[in-house]
Image 1 (spheres, each protein chain N blue to C red):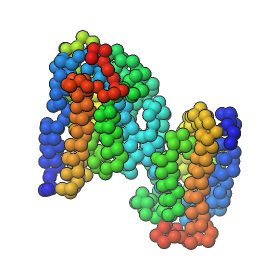
Image 2: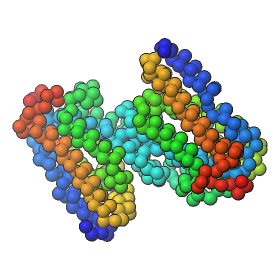
Image 3: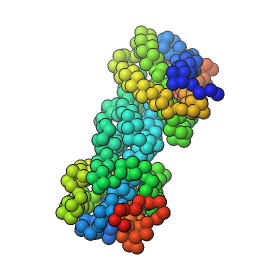
Length: 243
Length: 243
């Protein structure tokens, strides 16, 4: 392990994104390319809801570990983004517009009872990681945001072009995210470039991003195996009408 | 144990405040009555800084346990109150105006190295309580806010009247707190009145408030024994110039 310059560290992080970010997962290729059935799109949105719902809990867990008010204040904006200022506002509420638009029952979605075990395990592992690893690793695990603006524009274009049951309005969540994600990623990237000062810390940062990529990847693996091939839905999980 | 009506529960909570809140502690009698030396006032402000500094960490820990975005959103305002919107803003920064005004070195205060062990143990016990007990108990432990507007007005009047080294400007922290505390206490009281539905839950709520009163009380005990009587400062802790 050699000590990297901040620029080299950023390069290594971007390289992880290029190789491991879930944009490369075949489920996303299907989803964005219009090759999913409506049931598969529903399954994706319903499972991903659990991730969305846990994000503020993850972010508050991170704030609860910060001794520096400046970092807490910066990170607080993520709570605002996801929980909003009032009922019906914020990222979680906008995700529910998507599940509504896809014809999913809101109580089914928010009850979480139809999500795949693989979704639950992956998301819970992420929250646990942020609670238990170093603050540096917790912050670094958010760096998949560096890569999300690209996947979001790809997703919106692909889904609007390919699915008659998807409208601009139901995709409101994605309209809002790119500037928020870019701001958050800038802060976190800057933080890790300044605070990973030893080779060991830099490896921990790279490991945290790999871990987070594996969380997102595992969520799509679970969807693929349940709903695409070999289409064996685990007992108790959501079964689309068209499956 | 019998099941209380919400009004009876509120009455039992107010009764705990009347008997156990640190307004009754003899250190506060001295502090507010102008009977403290400047060194004792400094010791109080320096030790209490640790409590102030941990409050947003305590509150983020609570938010991190909430599955309901509405509660998270409500509780988020506490982070805003304490951390502010920018550097120099918020309750912690206003507490540092007080320690500045009392002539304490800011680095000494923020380093936390001169606080009493009793302060640290009591504050840490509070944070741990909020992280580990039920959400209902965590919320109930904030209910000392029900009693704080009274002590704050008493403190401001007493300190301004009695200490030449205290100005309205250095007490800016206390100017802001009463409306924030009243709003927060209303929310938390309403929450426990609606959510403590069994006799066991009500006893847990009452126990949480007793616990929190004991945290605040223990902090003043530590100050009293170190700086008032028998004035034996634990090794390593702050020693005033006048002691």
